[in-house]
Image 1 (cartoon, one colour):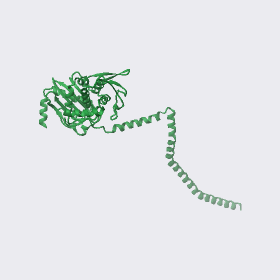
Image 2: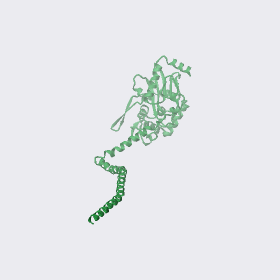
Image 3: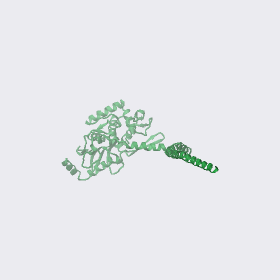
Image 4: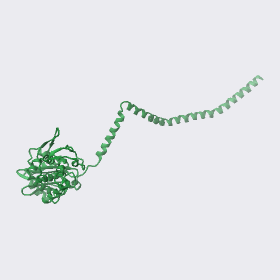
Length: 365
């Protein structure tokens, strides 16, 4: 009876265990699947947590940088400045009027850089070389040669004091000047600086203190140009800062020849340097034409000019191999190009082959 009950209990226990195993298997499988799903979710969420952690740490790093002296924060504007400078450098350069017209590409026997070139025998008016010499272009501060001529012809008192005022300040091109508003100098000194160093405030003050003021002065500039036969020329101010001051090389040769007759204009324009008393200080000015400082040149009169629309300009009366000449160069690409063209012209004129070169070039044309 005990054996029967024991066997019965064993069978019941076995059946219970079997039943329990069957029921537990799905539960274990479900638990395993759930665990695996949780692991996958953790892996999927890991990048998000890393990004969140990185974002959370950024303010801390920035705070540390500020605490350490703000080096990183201070460096940011420097990067922006570099980027801004790069953007400015990428902007296209301003092209002169002559270059826009393609005048620099015109052939000449000397392969000059200037858009316009002219060499005239001062005594015979023979044109020894001409390149686009009738083209009408902005002439920049070559305008001051007419300003000087009118002041010399007006016979105004040259020792009279001229005071620089606010109307003499360049607000068109915003060019600088060492003559501050309120500066006092004689008319002779103003003319000296205008012709030698191309001082714009001095040139404007000369026109402003002319009888009738700037308007009357500009009107007389154009009248005088007409009297000289400068039919391609128009002036709008005494300085040349406006690109509306225009002329041709042939007209400028006429102006240079007439200006050369005035000893004062010869002396002031070719002066190597000049000192102007300015309160307790002395302002030292040098000639804007580097060829004046070159002893190998014999220059009787000169004037340089530059604004972006005109390029680098130069007019000179020179003696080469005993021959008096007028040279005009307009719209060179830079100061070195302007001087290089002048040197090339002189070497060519000094050689015995320049007449043959002209004839050969004419035959090709």
